[in-house]
Length: 324
Length: 224
Image 1 (cartoon, chains in turn cyan, red):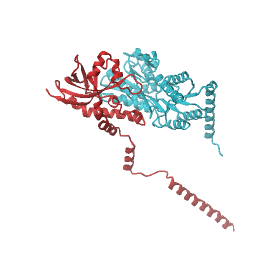
Image 2 (cartoon, rainbow over the protein chains, first blue to last red):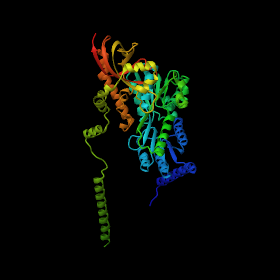
Image 3 (cartoon, helix red, strand yellow):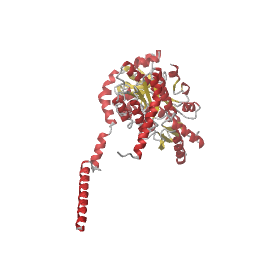
Image 4 (spheres, rainbow over the protein chains, first blue to last red):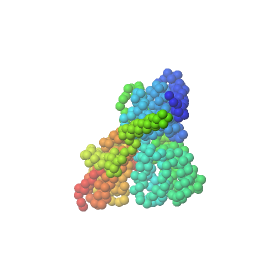
């Protein structure tokens, strides 16, 4: 048997992740409570941190030991995490996938091991692997944003678009929803469209380069708030924050605050806490009540947040939701 | 003798090379490194595997949506409920998709055209007292009301939300081509019409006063 350098690295990595899982899950197993894993695509974005924390909190309220794992936007890391979860005897997975296609085998593996998987926010491109998928209705949310964009920018002018991760369903759904409205106005021209991968730093960098090439744009539509915040920073640095209206998507606290200060034109609230809570409650129904039928895809409404209604939103949700 | 011993290994080497070439030939026969496919054949293969949102939308429109329009709620009933308590419209007549604070209405009614403008066709509803009006949209149609108002098409029927959303966009195109274009061009103030339409209500009571409907079916019943 011949060991290659790559093989040795792979063994070390898998071993390390299993050890990591073992140490994480000891907290849960030591309590004697059944364990639920919360696997999040990335914890490098506050919105996803809120998603993971809300899922963990609700699972704990329902009597489980919950552990949050960071897939670091990498399907291979996610796969190793799922392997560890299966071997450690977790009872359910609340899952925010890294990739709509590459995450499918990971969900299938858990399913084959008898562990129900409840997807949150991001979907996988199949209906026969996850127990249920609780998804933001990104398309409908961006239709609303598109309508507001036309109201604010007018029916003509040049604008730019910052897209999320290439190939990701949310990237396409948000862009499609927005363009289903804006493209009906022929004098509104998208002069530059670039991927900034849902990342704040990349958003700032891409916005700076767009401003070099197209200094006369009047607006920028960003597929999430992290990119919108990055774009706003670049506009501020270039002294163009008054000229270019920024539109985001997510309902991140920082973006909502800037909408209130009229620095960002609008965002769309995705309700991460509500989605996460629902996923934990579904897992609980599976485990305690033996419920086996769940709607495969449950869409969660997205609401437009503008300076006119911003007082009704905050803390990653609506004030009405928080008061319940 | 020396020359002969040199010949034997050379022959063996040749035999080994031939055997290797034979093995590679057999292997590549069963596992070819590439396939040559005619361009036309490739195009037709990829087309058949692509999702045809327009075809799905047309089939849904003719075979399921239009036959279901008879289930629409009478608009005057909804207007009366909205007048007394807007909150009850959602619970009594609305359809919610998933978890959402907004809802969809599927309404039918008869009315008289009062004005035709950029926003749409304004109607005074028959049998509404006091007199109430609705707007039938004639501008660009956005969103998913056409897809979602009946509840006949669900996200779970599609492997991914992209396809589900593409169908919503195509249904809007069908409405624009087959309903709103005609409505905009042919309807005049003073005419009486029968209609079925759908709407998404996001804000109460604003979206209920007046209700702005995406027209799904319109029939002119009298021409003044």
